[in-house]
Length: 529
Image (cartoon, rainbow, N blue to C red; front, side, top):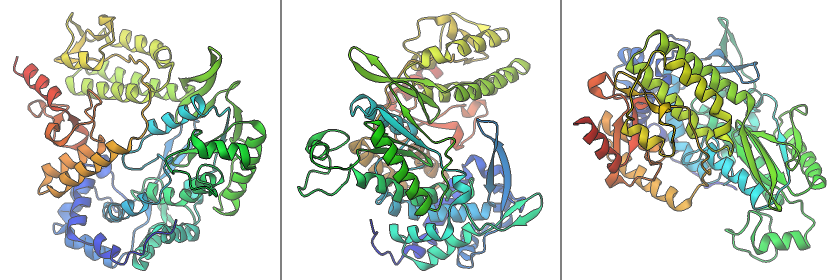
């Protein structure tokens, strides 16, 4: 668990290449137009400090972060989540640190942690959850809720964990400490921050994973990575193989498997007695070692054969089928309500002002919803009513055509009711909220290794803003074509403008997506016919 000593971290962080990439990355970030307490957006900041690289380097050397600006956003349960928005200067500095520190931490992070990590996603976490229910036959799920996690992180514990994981440069540790203690401006008053890491900071998700990484390994060492007298192969596990069978037969250890996404995690166990013991041990570790509070009202042990658990916006249960139990999952009620609110609001905006740009934004919201929630086995039934509600709402202001766009055919190949895709605003085909279940994908090592190699090649080719954008798009999309969902090698990699430049589209990250050569040819052909 102890990382190798690194003595040149600070020099890497303050290198011109690293600072330049941080500046370019933040420029394309959607938060670049949101100011901190100094009132400066990204553009205003660049205008004020034209020699940005040298200015940022000097600011890191004399690091004194400004307080973050407190803002609140609504949560699914109706309560408010506090966000801390750093200034543009501090966001660039945090990005400089994140770019160098993240690869060091990734080598030490636990394999079944999926939140805010490169080449990992909620889909991988759901896939692992399905695996433990379907194949590992884990009947009980322990859902532990950490009370106000981001607000109660202990700074001294976090800094010790940063050092232990491999961030062994005292100058870097000091800068992280200053970030944590920067303070918060709330209602024009600056308040000290003695605990917590602000949600909204660029480096906060990485620090959160560093903090909870020891929890992952604590649970894992009780069972999955427990030391045995016989040296079993490390690749064997997940409820299968000789090591697991031997542990079940000869040891008195408690069988348990953790799946974590940020501060949201589930521990799977085979029976109630084991689950009760594991919950007590885990709660004790969280409270004593991590100095965090467990919300006992929201934490629960669920028998998946009888009730469903909630995880990452889904309701998940094990249903009896042909003599065995298999996963059945639905979109959680609160998640569905949030989706409905957003889409209905956007549909009303289109009705008031029907134009291609609003239609494209609506389509991107539809696709984002489908791509995420299609992991639910009952997604078609869950979204069906809302699909027709939106269709009836929009058809009054849309032109109806018999034909479908080629993009629509690519996106919805199994949709037989073509009336759902016959609505157009100008030359934009409105997409329906139609989804069929897609089995969530596990993280594959072979593809991940190739992705890292491809990212490094693109990174080395960064010479201007466009090549930096291509790198960011490929990395964000994890090297997958947004239409075919297949992995794209570099010789077939194309960047597509969602809103064409001729129609007012911009060279910005949210308007760009990864596509393969085949899809690119189809779009080009369609454009010229």
